[in-house]
Image 1: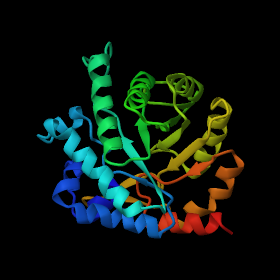
Image 2: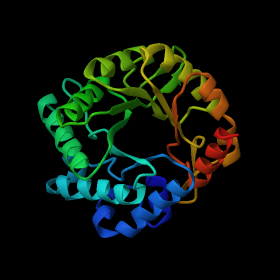
Image 3: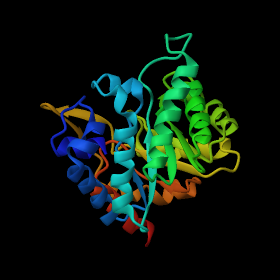
Image 4: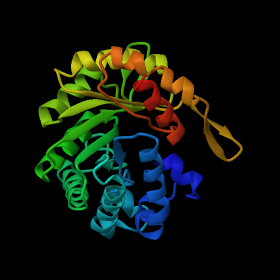
Length: 276
């Protein structure tokens, strides 16, 4: 979503969630493009929809308005052809003792956002790009308490000499056991700026082993980002991205999508490959 909105004029670092009200037509055009490409899960434009993140854009008091609008826009496009995932990203800070954010306050912020997304028509909650398992745990519990019947929790991992780890040094097994205990219904990984598609195949196998039978979702980037002038580019082509789908399925993934740099063309190629 972020990559696509930037193509439509959103400045890097700007509050894309504001476009749910200011430019709803542009947000819906992205949803329509992905639906036409064959996506059966549409992700709301609410990644930075907590009061913590919105505060940086002068919109901390607009959590209900912006998240409900984001869910309604996706819901109107999805109709009965796709499910809507209410998107919740990191709150943008660090929990105590690493930072000064209080767990109870962060939990309340996640609960507020999840409640607004569900009120707007989201079918499920997607908690993504998490590095801190304690933060992910708070988000899952808050989403469940807000009334979400299905919650997906995904982490972003990097390859280290010791194996795949989050930025906080958490292993795949450690990350998943935390969110599963908190009530997650599906688990997995998204993003990972330095992970190749081969890495994602190996990571998927680890995720499946640690998932305790829950469905595993993987959403790789379209390669590693690079700067081209003032633009961020991703070099993995749609055909290259699609070619890895059978390997991800063989490794045990049950939901496959795309993260940064993945265009509707990537999803279309992946979908056609999937249905061969």
